[in-house]
Image (cartoon, rainbow, N blue to C red):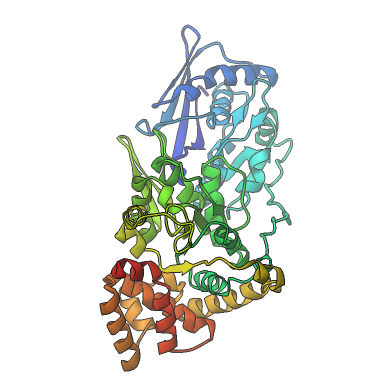
Length: 495
């Protein structure tokens, strides 16, 4: 048989399109050509495959070899096709049986010795392969990652081991997920002394999945509070864990088994935040999917970098368009930010020398549309030394996390999603207001000059406050507290 067909998977964002590897051996001068829009790394696989076949004690056919990677208009890159190409050549030359090739898909880079090396994107490939009913064969190092998918997946250490499986001599081991991986413990909220209002805001934000902005002088604990948020969030469910692992797999990063916490530096470019490149890769907002994105020193970020966060905050995904393709990455993250009240950070104190124009210019770096999308603005004030020394330890993360988990359970049982994700008619259905609550909210919105989006954010936060105390309907106390979390809107209105 001089023609064989094997299957592999490309990497396209967090998806893995099927690639059919067609190999044909013909008479003529010995050549080895790969067609089908291969990038440089794919073209270089000719030398890797040749050496791997020879060093695995097989014969490399001295014939005219043509390998077609279909579909031809899909760009192919990386060494992920090495294993499929090598098996296609061996099957076309009759050295391995080709019948079982139709039941399997192969991804893996070959060393010159025939050893298999891991490639990024094993989990998306395993998820896509499971939908076809085929068995995916991956390098041993990628086995734990690919095992998170539902389908059948097997691991191999070398090309020779895969060929032994095809000959029926030795079965490949099934991929196994890591049993009980030690999950790094988050810092405990008990270490935060005082700051009861800020702790309360953090708990409310965790319970409803709300975006949160801390503002206050330097050294008051804004970063400390934000870093404790993952410790009071419920653990990832299996579906969420698979989504997060798929994003990290496509980025070539280590497997993650807890809620992400990403804290990029304020010098990060727009492409670093949302992703990009000629071959688009996920950015920080996608790496924070199902977790927390913390932006410290928020006004110091480039204005354009902050503005491009507006659409992902609403849609929960980011679309990156290039000339050849459009890639969609998930970006359902919870934004937590921190900023100073003025350029020097000490607004209201004797040492502050900032002029009103400087303060307005500093705060003006945050646009109104961006602030509208941040549900809660919480002030973190300076504490006197005596209170820091005498204040008892705060409530531990475990106790706060239990209340957050109960509140989220109520939300999921009532509406199938957390409060921050409510939209449109769902707000009218799940956030009804009585006459007193409606009058209070209307009067307050007129005085503060809030937008319609801010109105909806206040409703969502009030609904979360009611869920924390297991109230069926929203009361005036919840409306008043939710309005108190629009501090920066109030400050802009009174300027």
